[in-house]
Length: 449
Image: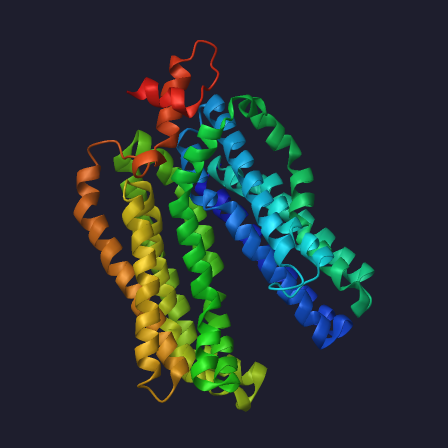
């Protein structure tokens, strides 16, 4: 698949992920009522948190490993099996802990909690990371579209009162199941032969190689969820509401950047192993998309204030200075996507990549705390703290790119740090295996030595 078709497919898929919940939102609010709608939203957030833990960053590490070994079916089947088994084990742990906490620490009943767990289970059955890594995003986009459309129809026809809150949660959480059924032919083409070679040691290696991706995903989710409560703590609900509106305008630009790195990451990961120079050229070309990030930033600064007043009224004009301060964030995210997510992650700086993300979160917390006590508008202080975080990530990742990028051009890139060299080990072991079967990772390590 060409990069253009891959990008279009990912754009369609992410657009469906954004639009379908928005179409449900007004209907759910009217039918469920404020109280039960709050319970519905809370339950979905619990499901997404569980999905983040179960995914464990494999959307990063496993996608990179499969992309670099895309012409080695035995390696792909082994990686698919190991990631699936590892995620299933994590899901069992999360389900056990969540079931114990439901009705107490978690403000959902046990039946509703099981409905929320359909989200992580669907993530196991529908391996989006595999489609993207193999540059078959079109099949994934079709499956997601069918799943989202079916969920929309079922929600509008079956959820008719607040007594059906659990059903509403189950419908919205079952999209992954439908997508898995639609994409079953693709999954069958990968095969299930790799499950025969899965051992506790292979599961342990996947956990060790994937934890940095998990750390990155967890920090990103914290940075999305934390600012609004932080503003409310320092300035109250009105300021939090204004910040939330401004934040939504900024977050509306994020699907573009996600589609961008998901489009380029498989190709860059493959080049990093087989043709490092070509991968670096592709990353440099990706910097041309800064024009798009700059356009988003200009829109937020000049036009978003008028849209806010038009849609929400003058009573929410407090969001205008916040969105103008945050207007620089899209172009910073755009640059960080190229230098951090594409270069550092794929060209052997995975440990520094994960550490930089954690340091960025700590800088955000420190700057936000200090500025909230100094500035008259804590919402602006939190916005500045987010900008400080993005600037630190950009300075460090750009330093890595421009300092080490030229030296990487002449030698094959590693697949990460330490145990993260998954596909290289697997490829060597397949070549050494007489029947083409993939041995255990313990045996692979012996072969490597």
